[in-house]
Image 1: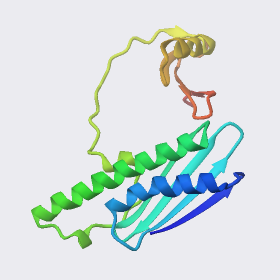
Image 2 (image 1 turned 180 degrees about the vertical axis):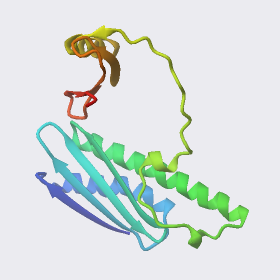
Image 3 (image 1 turned 90 degrees about the vertical axis):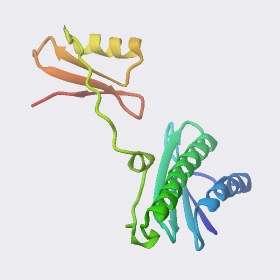
Image 4 (image 1 turned 120 degrees about the vertical axis):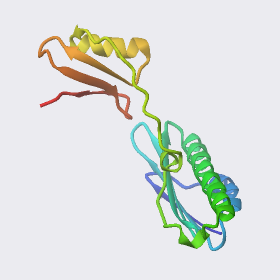
Length: 175
């Protein structure tokens, strides 16, 4: 197993390198040699990002996580990749018993969402009332939601306010 660690705006200390190597070692049991794992650690203003790209006999896998702490980002992305690889290994094992050849599967780049089964669409009816954008933002914060659909009192049209990854709020306005 070859591990390549790269840092963007991050000082790669020996402690950080050994932590990454120890964590990605857990992924080895889900893959066959040769394995190349490329880890890119980057730092932006208020977020630390860990990206992992795994090239193995079974395919190419990619995961990315971010948080306010680099070690937390590393933990999260390794956990995500472990779930992805475990599900894939179980799927290959299951197909083996069904008569599907492992080599006949196509190479893919995956996030955990793509490995999961087809999502079920559950319809919910909500009563939207006219409100200002500021009132919608307050309600979004008060209810702890990630997004909120509402009728804009000023325009009379449906709008969606949502929480962005950077912590700010976004507003979707139809044209």
